[in-house]
Length: 113
Image 1: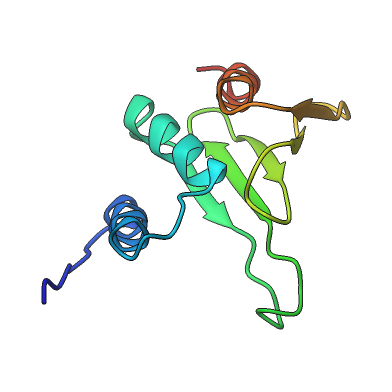
Image 2: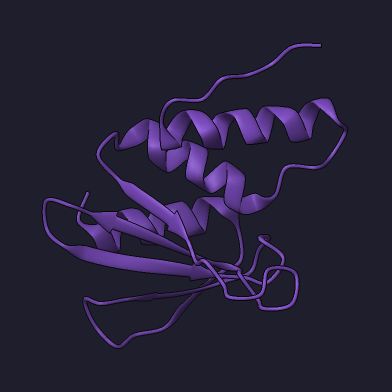
């Protein structure tokens, strides 16, 4: 058995993704989006909504924050797969991303990277 010890958020996310792959579980679109954005922008802060009742409450919201500007955007999908509803604290616009590249492009543009 191979144990993975994680020290950072990025490492924990990568370890979780690797465990899912090893178990034959499909990787969700949000996992691919997080991987690409984290690799491109090392200082990006990414958090998933923490709910009061896991398994009952919908935790399908991920927050992406550019610490240099304070701009935050969120991707929402109850399944973690496309399409995603995208909103930010920059303006009141709501956008939809139907593909992984579209989600990455919108988040990158909104955060000012």
